Each structure stands twice: as structure tokens, then as C-alpha cells.
Image (tube, rainbow, N blue to C red):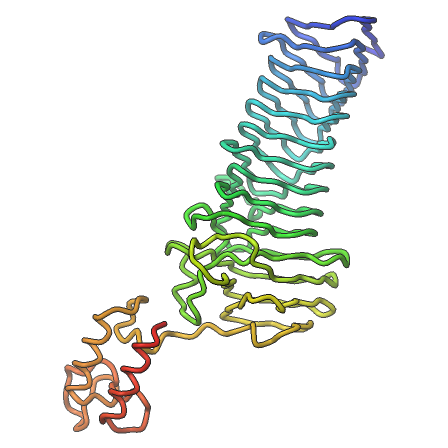
Length: 397
């Protein structure tokens, strides 16, 4: 209690039981190394501060920060046991903080050059990390109905998933980085909600090569820098203007709900440096809504084409021919979303019936007609329609 100090000069400080600060008190521990044994419990009580002055700290047991508490490690720290940081708590490390168990933080702050998650990190409410973040292969970071601010870059080789807490009025999950987001080939990024947000001040560098491990189909990807150029990796197989490219369940598809550049004046360049779709040729970007804010520039000088349903362009696009609207595939005559022999057979049936409009033939009386065979929209069904459809079918969608 009060203002306490424990010093082990020239030696180790090992704690095998409970070590805790009283509420609103402070404590300083100094040693060449610090160890919390597997049965130990290290607790910073409500409003207290605990400082561990050691180059290395190994936390085999449980580490707890109660509301408004602070815990500071002068050097690096490795949490082998579970760590819990409650409302408005702060955790600081002078070196890397490595999590090997379950780390849970609720509306708190972390300050460390690198937070290295190798197991499970749960983010509740709005929390901030001052430093960079690495999510290791096999590790999971869950953002629950709040925002994880990272004042640095994030490298993900494991799983990052956004969820909405059950029975609460929380907002959709948000990942907000001042730096870049780097996604390894085996990474998983899942933000499966309308208005879920991934906002970057740096680059979007995605090497994910399996569409089942990427879900931004309803979310927002926002690139908003501070003037330095940002790069945006193209991921999708170029299917042209085919609407099925927005279906994330189809192999090779990595669609985005809304792609936004700005509103802070930003320069974003499309690139294709990773092989995401497993096919030769330049990959594409498919978005439902593309927004380019005033003062921002989308540099489309690379081979990448951006296909969109809705475009709001108040900024600058270097090559507007690389922005292409998504259109229904006219040759997909049965509306299945795929172009195959069934479409050709369906069109041939309607052509044979002489269908010039839904539900009518040339005499306006054939109920078997379900779709117009007047492919060139001349008002007549003739050989020109058949030739036009055949050409569209051969080109494909």
C-alpha cells in the first residue's frame, strides 16, 4: 500500500504467490529479471500503478489490471498466463509485449514498440495500442463491437475477426491503423457486417490466397493518409463486368463493400504485387460502392481495373478508363449467375417460340415465353438476334 518499493540488487525477483497493489496506491519493483510463477497472481488494483523495473519479465501466472489501473514494464514482457485489463486500464512495456495465452482488454490502452499476439487477444469497447501489432500464425484477434486503434502497423499471419457483442447496442467492429495492414498468404480477415470498418493511414498489402479467409464484402475499406502515397493491392480474378464477382463465396473473388479514399486528402495507388487468385494476368478490384473524396487522388496507372456498382467521384482519377461499372451479363439468359450451356439452350427455346417480350410471342399469345429473344432489341425476332446472342455467348461474361 501507499508508495512501496521492493528491490533485488544484482539478482532476480521471483513471485510465486499473490502480489498486488492496494487501490489508488503505487509500487515499484526493481531487479535484473522478474518472474511471476505459474501459480502467482499479479494484480494492479483499482486506480493503482505498478512498475516493474527489469530488462525482462516473464509472467507465468495471471496478470490483472483493474479499472483505471496502470502497469509498466521497463523492458520486454512475456505473458505465458492470462492477462486481463479492465475499463480505462493502461499497460506499458519498454520492449516487446508477447501474449502466449488469452489477453483481454476493455476500453484500455497499451503502449509498447510491438504487441506480439501468439494466442488469443480479445478487444472489447474502444481500445488503443501505441506501437505496432503482430498477430502470429494460429493466433486470433477478436474485435467486439468497438474500435481497435493501432498507432503503428499491423502484420497478420493468423485470424482477425470482427464481431458484434450479443445483447448490446455496440457499433460494428472497427480496425483503425495509422500505418499499414499486411496480410500474409495464410491470414484470415473477417469483418462480416454492414459498416464494419478497416481504416488505414498506410498501405493495404494483402497476400491472402483463399477467398474463404477474406470477408470484406459488406464492410468499408478506407484509405486516408497524411500525404504520403498509399498502395492498394488488387486481389480478385478479373471477371470483367460480371456481377457474380461481388459474390465472396466464389473462388477467386475478394470483393469489398465500400472502398473510400479520403476524406483527408490522400493519394492511393493500385498495385498487383501478390498472387491472390492463383491465375495468370493482372488481378482486379471489385467494390459495391467506390467513393473518392474531394482533394484525394486515385492513381490507376497500374494494370488494375476497379469494377463498381456505384461511383461517387469528387476527387481525381489518373486513368478513368480503369473504373468500369458492373453490368448484368446479357448472355446469362437464365439469370443463374453463371454462363453455361443452359443459357444457350434457354435462349434457343425462346428464339424458337419467337418471343419478343416477357410472356408473349410474335402474335402476343404464347404463355410459354418467359424472356424476350429479341436480343438486339429491334422489335422483331429474327436471325440477327440469334447471331447477336451467339456472339455474346462466345465472348462470355
